[in-house]
Length: 326
Image (cartoon, rainbow, N blue to C red; front, side, top):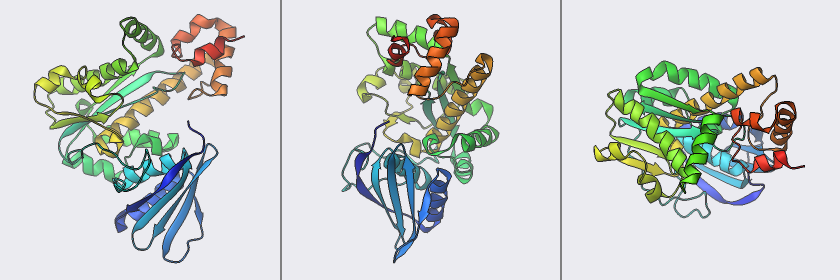
């Protein structure tokens, strides 16, 4: 996670119905209120990893966000997920504008896919796909479904339960790639000159194929752009693309409710696996790739040997070198 990287001030035009929702969502992430100034409805600050972001909602409807990453990026992701806003094109910086074409309306029948655990040393990589139409899209939005990165673990579990109640079983698919299988596939793909993007494309393909085989007929398939677009399209869902269903990859695809729902189910699957493994080991497996992760891995190595980590960790990570370092 980057530390205090400056971000350009970004301005949004927010509808009245979304202003309180954004305010409450910031509170849900630990945002703190500041006294509002003249012509301001509210102002709040969000702190994360030593960084801070400030969001000021003006009575005119303008919402101004400033600060440093990673707090700024989290605040912007939340705003765009809750209000489905895109920053104005004149806003500069890597997070301010996108050259991606606009996705079709999320109320059209489509499948959204996303994954979780990709950057975590411990635990599986989980990929989920969710089919939504106009009815389910509206219900999921009403329930507060949004990008899982803007949701606390506690709230996420409740949202995942709600999604499973709203979305029929045949309209959702979750693939849990446990560490041992992940390590085997990654090693195999590396030996063939491939990389993580190939593995990601394979998992996204699997969940979509499971949904298509159940008889669903989406108008399009949407996922985040997790690699070079041409590279991914050459491998992702060849049979599906030939059948005429467009495959769209976009930055910040989690703004779409289908992709957001998939991100929540994927993250929930990851957390469930991690909790179960922690109970089995009698050791809490931390998320991410922090010094705490390294310390826990060394504890497991001293107890059961380095080879035992293949069952619980992605040993291809550079973190493994730190674990085994004298």
